Length: 177
Image (tube, rainbow, N blue to C red; front, side, top):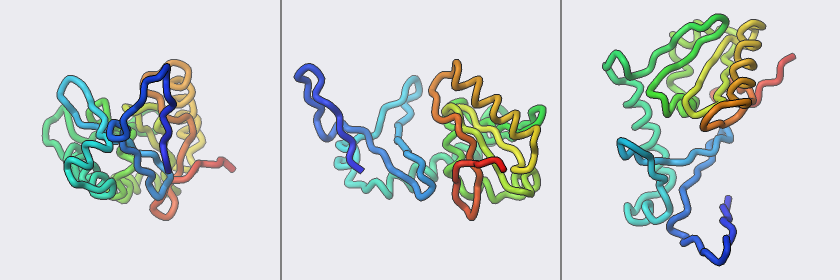
């Protein structure tokens, strides 16, 4: 896929400054950032060229970094599953929660599969929100839809209000029967 950035009032965007975007098999568009402690910087084409790195290798490194972030032993960091009224939330660091859908191993853990024996449905309405429930939990699905609705109405760093279901190791749009 090519990303085209329009000419704005005569200002040209240099090819090497265009942010990297990678599309996964599940259809997620992944944009890569470098955490600079007080801000984030996009990884762009120039950065990849300077590092002599492919987008595929960048993706592998990004997933490894995300996995490492989930393994923190700090009580206030690392991955935590918290029960809400009718669904579960996953907390990480307030920036990468939605990115956790990319970690296949997470969704295959006994901890998650025992909570979702009929399949796992998630909502990722913003970068810092990931909630999930069992695919046959009416109350859970209603709760996820409400979270997505509230974030769509007023949230920051919005992503999608669609619910997603995990089937055969991939995510797809959830269609309630």
